[in-house]
Length: 422
Image (cartoon, helix red, strand yellow):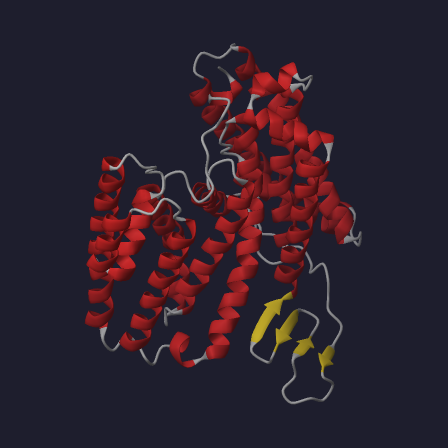
């Protein structure tokens, strides 16, 4: 970086005014007896983007409808940081190469879709059961391991689709059996401290699954064959430039943006399954029953819905979603029994960012984390350092979310209290 004092000076200026704006705006909204749920975040964005001018304007106007204003100030903050970085490090590849930036954006979007899809399962479980599943990463691991063993060991040459469906079935049954045996006692007052019990039993499931797989399959990394190979094709044929070009393992757009086949197929599948899940939740009786239990367990029971059955279905679906994410990515990464740790950590960050219990928030939060990781790693010249910084970006996002908007983007209070009990 040629002018580090410029970049860090602007960042420190923005942080200082963001802190002042967060504190001052909340106090102003309290003094006027207005809703303060978004005051911290709004004040921080106003201070970071516009400094004392933005804080003074909020102090004078105290707007009540703040959604679009907060979004605009957040985008302005990102723009200021990007422009400052371009002046401070004009030779950085993120500044000099538009093609590289486009490639990072597209790949960040694709990996963000996959992150968000995995976090959907965690958010679904919490919204229905009120339990944060610490075994979510192990369901992800089970999905990948199941696909590898089905397609490469037990039934060599079988279609990857069969492997993916088998992994989903295994995870669904495992989740349903575990919920019925270990979590059901919480709903009927048989457990004195249900919050701690939920944490402990899901932790126990995580350790059991991880070490069972390590004992039976070993600790050596495995990887499934690529599910889909593209035909060699380009459009326009013989054109200059070529807009779209495919090889067996990748898709290239405008000769700049390269997307690997495993990631592209995983992202497209995640979007299709997400649409199917939304259809299930909003257009079928079972989905409406799940949503009813998430809003009011006792009211749903009075209406004739079996809450225990919905809890079992929610936990099984959540585990299956995590397993499906792993099943789709085992073709892209080497798989170990410990592979679920980092995806689980990302899922927790994404769920907090999107809002506990919010499915749209989880998906959008995953895209945001993917984009932040892509921007952060792409602009660090040293590739080894860039890779080592990836977990830090998620922790930064988590810290800022807890400080500025603890409920997340679309969070709400859990209506039925802890574990569906009153």
